[in-house]
Image (cartoon, rainbow, N blue to C red; front, side, top):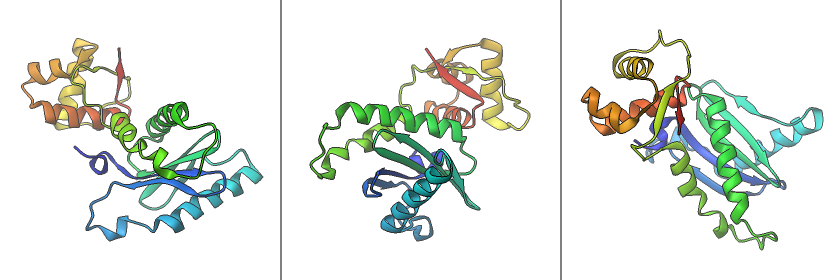
Length: 198
């Protein structure tokens, strides 16, 4: 599973000045329609935030026909994720919050202008959006599951019956390949049908 399959298309980290200090595109390399110009996008996203901060308390989300831009501000930086509209915005916002909190702990107090310090964000994005540990516990959120079908429905029913369970246990008892169980559970998590717990 990759971040594009999860619904994450781009991640931008912008300074208050609008300068892009980190950008990563997660779409397929041959999909030029889904790879907007970084400079234009950074300027636009920053301008929208500046405008909305002047008339309200800032932006939390912007939607287009096919995509959603989820905003999160932490100190002097703006984190913006471009996602499929089907990806739960609260889920994305929480992930951006966790990423920004981790970034703030290792950023120097005085930035020297080098964007190399931001390269570590790539690993944080993968860690947050694709949980690799099969030992993660999941439980249902109570969201109506009538829209689910196939393996998603079976895993949801399993969790409703068994309660909190590890992903490795789900895969083993349901005789589902671990990779498939992880992909399906990640979709359930991103759509807020299940939540991870300890």
